[in-house]
Length: 502
Image (cartoon, rainbow, N blue to C red; front, side, top):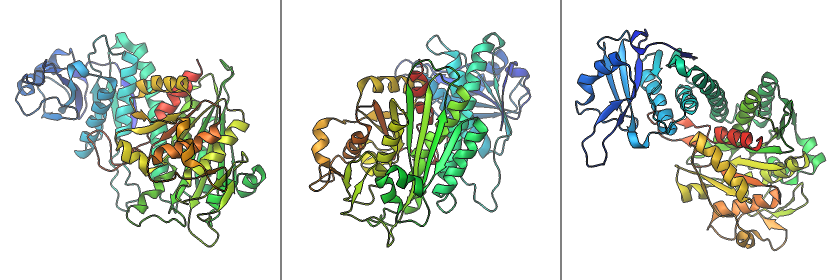
């Protein structure tokens, strides 16, 4: 796609599809809808007026009304996209509305479109909305059907955001950031979408290294011998069942001048395919286990954005990638592994492998100098049971760190729900023969016991754990985004990093 920011009158802009947003200004749910277009352009208002209150369109979030040959406009079509109640208008709704416009265009085989920057009230920031709209239409262009032999490329060719020249500085700032964030998130999605026979740990290392080279980041990729040298017994234990060697990927960003002494460690679970190992998963749904490296993809995508945005804080990305396979050489329930930190781990279930590779990744990031840690992982089905697919789990050992992350999330509008990670849960991972066990005593609180396990390796370092199992893959297409990999957490991680650079 060729995205552009243009300063042009909407009525005079030549395009196959012009999009404008609408809201419902009705005061209460019982009131009849009262619709208003978010534009002051009179010709556009006049073209929409005869149809706006026809009853077929209520401006609900994701709703659309398509008008052909709109009177007075040079656009071939006028698409009105609902953004919900006027009183609740937000950057999140406008991001979705921009995405809905693109998904609608793609479905109708339209490849060029324009979006009118909305008329805003004082509660919304121009740059933030510009960024959100840009993210929305770029993220909406992604489709996951890349391996179809007869695939019809429905990618958008040109999308213009039409803005007011008096707001040029703010619009350009938001537009540039939106391009960076969306590109990083879409890169993460492309990694998650790859099948396990293509994206092995070695291949993931190659793609991370290629991104780093293109972005000006330092990168090194290690395998079995380096893991043995470092004493990463937990990571090696998971990897030993596969013929595919593991990959330890280390990415580094160093600012020209750091604002403080913080060093941020981004740690990602990179299980490129997860069978469950000896504790094998049911066949139903196992095909989706190619997405078990979504945490790693989020961190690689985040590093790409960090390289472009250049925050004034040092960042280290650590990816622990392996396959979890059953074989004669695979690790087994009852085994005891010694992690890099020296802690011993009794293996109760080989399908609780993600926390094992992260254990060594978190400790390694600390040895490289990380003063703050964040990890992302499709870690537990228990988190999906607890939160469904509308929130990812958030765990931490430090309230101030969580507060900073919440500020970041307020900018990205991603959804995370904090769950407890307090010391009274520690007994649930005690082992009779080792320091800790890799699952809880029973099935209850599985997402929490997994977080408690990771907390052992974060230690006193301020740390956040994101369990993204419920949101890393979208099962059903929505009005604003395709089904498939979501790239969740990329934007929030980057905003958190930027906050730590203050």
